[in-house]
Amino acid sequence: MDYKFLGHGTAAEVKPLENSEYNIDSLLGLYDVLFESVWRIETCAPRLRDGWSRENVTLGQCSITAFLVQDIFGGEVYGIKRPEGNYHCYNVIGGKQYDLTIEQFGDEASSLIFDNTNPQSREVHFAKEEKYERYLLLKKLLKEVCGK
Image (cartoon, rainbow, N blue to C red; front, side, top):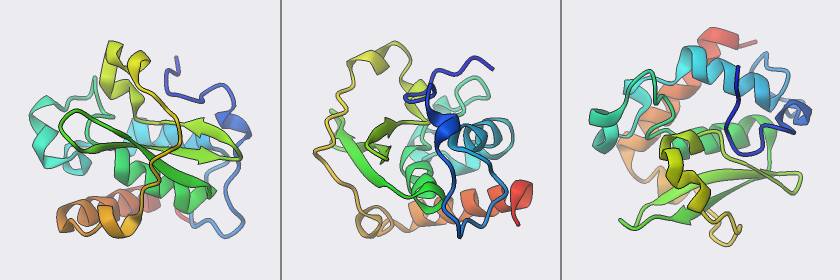
C-alpha cells in the first residue's frame, strides 16, 4: 500500500498499550485495518456523507479515529481549527505527529499547520451524541475485525 498519512514513516514503530483490546501490532497495522475494513459511510460525519466514497474513506473520520488511536496507543489528541470553525483532529504519540485521516484533504493537506496548540477533549467532542455514537460504532467494527 502507498501510505500518504502524516507519520506513516514511523507508524510501524508505534506499538499498542499493554491493555489494548485489539490484536493490532502497530499504528500502521491499525491504519490498514481501518482503511480496508472499518471506515465506512456510517462512521463518516453526517454533514460530509455526500462526499464520502471508497476512494476517500478518511473523509469525516478524524475525531473518532484520533480518540480511538489514543485508546490503543496513548498520546494526546490535538486539533487544527478549520475555516468553518470545526477542528480537524490528529494524534501526538511519543512526541511525533500522526494524522491517519489527512488524505481527506487532498492537495490542501500540505497547507495544514500541525502546531500542537489546540488540545482536544473527549468531553467536548462526545457531547455531540451522533459523534459519540459513531465513535462507539468505529470501536465495535474494529473489535469485530481484530478484537481479543
